[in-house]
Image (cartoon, rainbow, N blue to C red; front, side, top):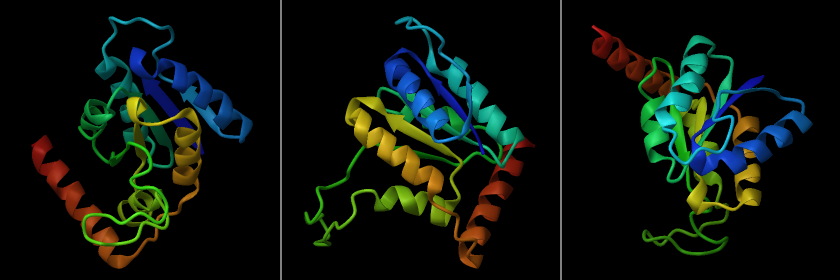
Length: 169
């Protein structure tokens, strides 16, 4: 699988670590920038390249980075066929209780569900909210998590595609 990477200055250092990590795992990696640390660069310039590549090759994926990851996900989701998920880090410590009173036994469950239910193909990492170790774990988990292919999930993805087509008209 080909994995595109992109960031601005905020995620530059982590992108460089992730690139080495993914290459070590045997992934084909294409770096869409930034290629140097420049505090004046703008994330849309780089994120758009990765998102367009995924839009054109649905068998590929992208991992994008930014301070919050929000703007980066917004840019990526502008491209047809791109479904970007945002990851901030562990939602709750293992065993903690969320606001609904549910126990959190796996803080990365939401990330796996983005693949299983939504067949996400871009992962946006908010670098100000994760450690390098958390990011590497999340990326590996996300890349290895399969899409369920369930009828209701595919039906929903198909509806998203129809919305995209209307926006293009």
